Structures are given as structure tokens and as C-alpha cells.
Length: 170
Figure 1: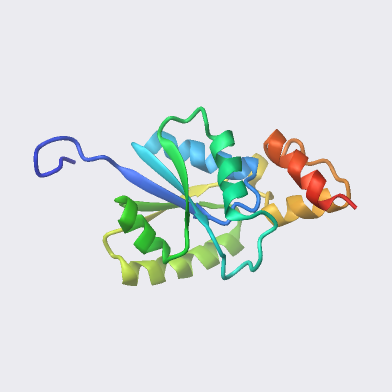
Figure 2 (figure 1 turned 45 degrees about the vertical axis):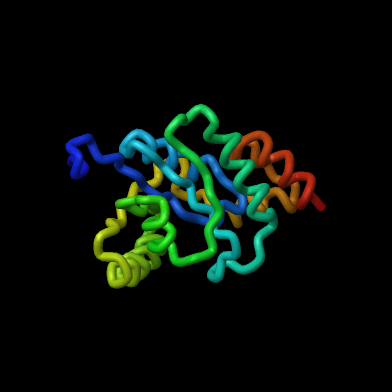
């Protein structure tokens, strides 16, 4: 696809979430998205409505993402506090990419897709299936493991594991 001046159009995708904290499953989706789009904006919900208060503030979550994706030159992270479709428009994205782990994710994302489509029919929702090794992985589960001293080193980046232990270990 070309822009009006004949140059190739930059394909931008938004990968939204609370990322509290980022997991290796999130990184898998972000990395795969980076292979499909020219530019990827990891959109960090500043104050999530659905999940309530976050353990880490937006600045720290952004820092975790920036450190974990530093080797991906077409990925950047930004906080947002508006409708995801409005944020996507603001950054020039044509797609919102989400990962799906299970049927419960599908049901929620199907509903969100329909609502987003009503608001912004020009922005496509794209879903990537979680890799089998990440199909069970949730930030909330990682936080629970960390609270009780469980092994989390293979579930999140090293710096995130360290911060979780500092914040949550009982």
C-alpha cells in the first residue's frame, strides 16, 4: 500500500495492555508483531479500569518494556489514558494487536473488538495466538507466585523478577 505521494505507507500497530508487569508471553506477542509491522507502539494503560490499581506505576512499566525490547528497533512504548482506538489514531496505527491464550481471552476480546469497531471501523483488530509455553501466563499469576516465593525467573525478564521479589515477597 502506498501513501498519496507514492511512497510505501508505514504500517503501525498498537499492542495495548496494563503490563503490570510485562511477562515473557507479552514479549512473545510484541516480538512477533514487530516482525509483521514497520512500527510497533506498546501502549501501556496508565490507569486501567478493568484491573484496578497497578503494582508498578506507568513509568516503571514503560521502563521494563523499553529494557526488554531494546533489541527491537521498530518498537517503542508509550503510556495512554484514552480509548485505545483514539490512541491508535493518535500514533497513526492501522491495527490493534492482542494476544489470545484461552477461550476466556477470546470472549473478552470479541466483545472489545465489536465495541472498538463501532468507534473506529478503520482500525483493524488482529489477534495472535499465544505460544504453547505462554498459554497459561498471566501477570496476576506471576505476582501471586512472587508473593509466596515461587520461581518466576523463566516467566518475566530478569529485572522484572528482581523488582517483583522486592515488592511482593513475604
